[in-house]
Image 1: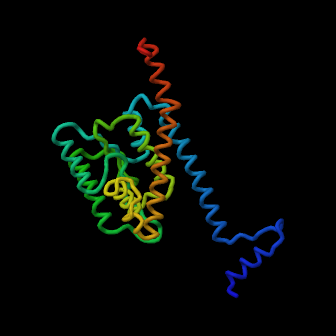
Image 2: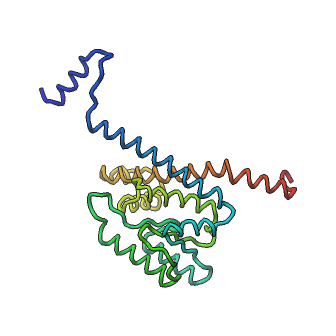
Image 3: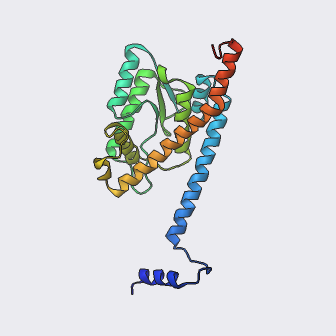
Length: 242
């Protein structure tokens, strides 16, 4: 009898109320899940604190982000802003918070990913200037004017704080897989997605968790802060129910 089967037999034959010795790997998994959930709650609390005192002013929120060392670029209107946006998308990124090419801890980011990120930094600094007192170590925000709103920034702020907290889902391959899932596969778990390697599927799951948490945070803010504030303003203006 193998050791694995022997452990199962001992567990099966043990008295119902006897303490069960859990495998170390299982305990480590439980601890990791608990730690991740605790960090997720901390991120939401910190994001809420940042938004609550600044939700009327996107510029104040941008200043808060830059005070912590991460640049916030708002894309101007006209041809220059369009060129920057096209360049961002051509490099494989989306508007909003763009994380740097982080590693999963075992292997460094692919060279092509680092090169692509450096190209992004070059586009932003050459076309929009160097932001004082910040750098690209912890990513960057690139926001068209249409998305320079507290609602969109709250969603992206949550991602930024999750990245800073070390939550998984932001390494180079996870982000690349997530962008392909949302773009090429339109967020649908189809046959091609299911054919991904277990490692890529696990990374995709982590990235999806971070997106769901950011969306849930935005929903909670909308229900608890944005909507009541808008209703109060309409009451003051005499337009509620009009």
